[in-house]
Length: 170
View 1 (cartoon, rainbow, N blue to C red):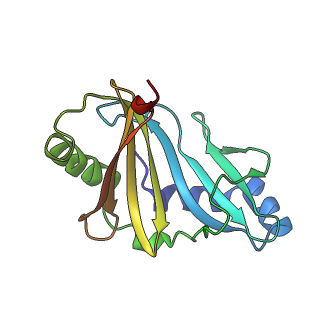
View 2 (cartoon, helix red, strand yellow):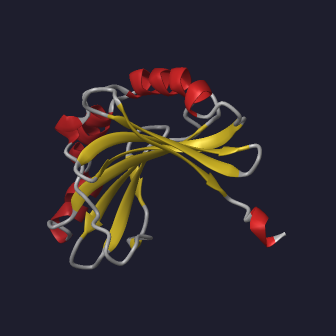
View 3 (cartoon, rainbow, N blue to C red):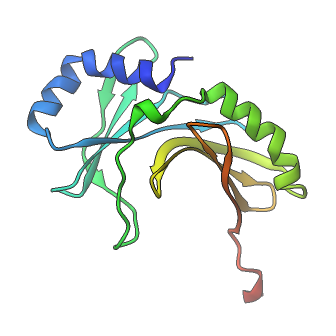
């Protein structure tokens, strides 16, 4: 698997990206995203996101299996009104996906002992000035489990379990 740095380098060499950048020079790198299986296997190609602060829209570049990239149309960003979309400094990603996944798989049984994981997704992004590998899975009990791993040093930054079904409403 290519590292985020390698993927970004490949993207930056693409005419598609260079043409987009000429028109959207103010756009900045925000994340890498990929759906993953419960065991952490990548289920599709990586998506690389760039945010344009002026338009408040996100543009996604998708790595194609046969080489190259395609671009998705600029789209709205789902965020809280006061939230900031932070730039991703690729140099802060020093822990590989494989190392972060290994750490997640080691920590998940103790961090989420009663949860049976289904499929999910991985995002490498900057949240509150920390670059993290952000693992999120849907559990068999319809909950989200989330573990954020510092992409610079491999430490666990945050964990959560979020109920998808409001049991109080019964």
